[in-house]
Amino acid sequence: MKLHDAFWITDPMFSHRASPIQFAGPERFHAPPIGIDELPSIKGVIISHDHYDHLDYESIMKLAGKVEYFLTPLGVGDILIDWGVAAAKVRQLDWWQGIEIGGVRFVATPARHFSGRGLFDKNKTQWASWVILAPEQRVFFSGDSGYFDGFRQIGEKFGPFDLTLLETGAYNENWPNVHMHPEESIRAHLDLKGRRLLPIHNGTFDLSMHSWREPFDRITAMGNVRGIPVITPLMGEPVSMHTTAGGRHWWDDPDRFKETERVLVKGQPAAEQL
Image (tube, rainbow, N blue to C red; front, side, top):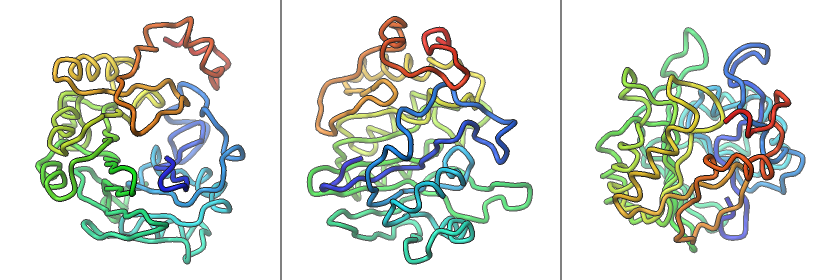
């Protein structure tokens, strides 16, 4: 994200697998649309929690030299410091705490999720959503969260938001408290008093039983019914935070997808994966 003439990135995950080991675990459906070496200098990295699909050791260490700040929930910053990230770059915030950097205010806000990277550290670190208040726009980043009343509280305190980045993917009926179904993402967007919705946490890793395209189909259909602009960029496509146009159904157009998307990590064109 470009905020007040500086670049920020959320939960950077560039590795092949969302796993503590790179020979097993969930694989990417497609290559990252840009490499870390191609990125410009980054003002800050915003971390939501410590799960492997959100906090990736290789990505963090490759980014560390070009990043000025790392914003994390409580405890997650200690992981980064243990990995070798300079402590002076790390800012750890509890829920409802805020910090201003480069003219942009960031507030760690509640989420309904959990944390842990192994068998014995469950919920030892905090998880968070993030409110991002730049002079040009107000953005909400959900991280991972089940639906809860906290979205309404955040919306009342900090809304309306020009753009909400809300997770809708990797959901399951048996996990109602940790991930949102598309219907719940729409409800959260309304609670937050959002204007435009960009659904996230889908289309990269297979972390549940639903099909690859189901989150896109369901949330765009509901957005149309409720009159909510749902932005669905092709992986790697630039998006203006001020756009009012909804996204196109690129997942329904395999020819265009094949032309635009890079070759998958497995070497199979993305269109064939669809």
